[in-house]
Length: 362
Image 1 (cartoon, rainbow, N blue to C red):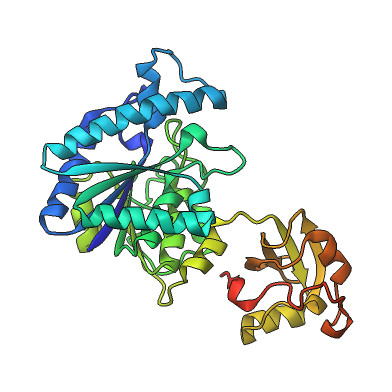
Image 2: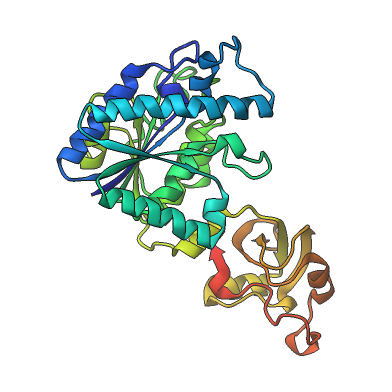
């Protein structure tokens, strides 16, 4: 099997925010156990900034973005050195990859990233992946590694995505407020009620929370990948997650239909540069008949976008139900609103969004 494992900062640091090797050693031992069973494993890890702060003896963790980027550049070396040493103790070779959103947005970069990871796995290497924080642009970055892990799971056609955290999984309520909170062991479909239950941000040390993990599980489900959200501290958590042991955490089932790489890229990797509102007839044509979106059905335009950008598509009620790549810029589309094909100028596209570049969202 091919497994992607993601561990967050809060699971490999102590209360002061400093890296602690014990949970990292535990994780590497569990990865080695999977490799001994001839499985392929990709590790997605956070922790570069936590590794860099003590190395630079800065005291309190700075908050300004430029300093944090510099710290991550220092910390990434220390983080990888620890993983390299811990994996080498089990006879495993590690290889570092730093990814950014552009590696998923740009098709050529996407193919390069996939080719590199595939070759590393063929060579028996354990790829260790982190977001490229040192050069990340705040306007275009993931900010947490959960979504990167889900996109990597799609990239390498993984069988299982394991998201390790401080909690045993998604609970029915906040245990700090409700003593009766219990583990949700299986989710068939991530819906709005579950997203509300997942709440907001995670710990002070980490950038994600249960909400980001549930969002990542949703991406993985659309990729045909089973996800398990579980506690990093649980004994043999990765192996049990792969085996599907009951109660290991919250398992999220994959969807029966798998989105193509391009459609997944449109739906979850590309940020929406704007939004279109369509009438009810256009919404039915898209949802029920699989048609392209034509200018005649578009009633409103928001945002600032150019041809080729991703935009959300909402119905008359304002609810977003699709996302796609628009074929006209905002000024051109404003002029085309409501026009039938025969009334368009020769320089106008016949379709606002082609059906092959449109993704229907639940």
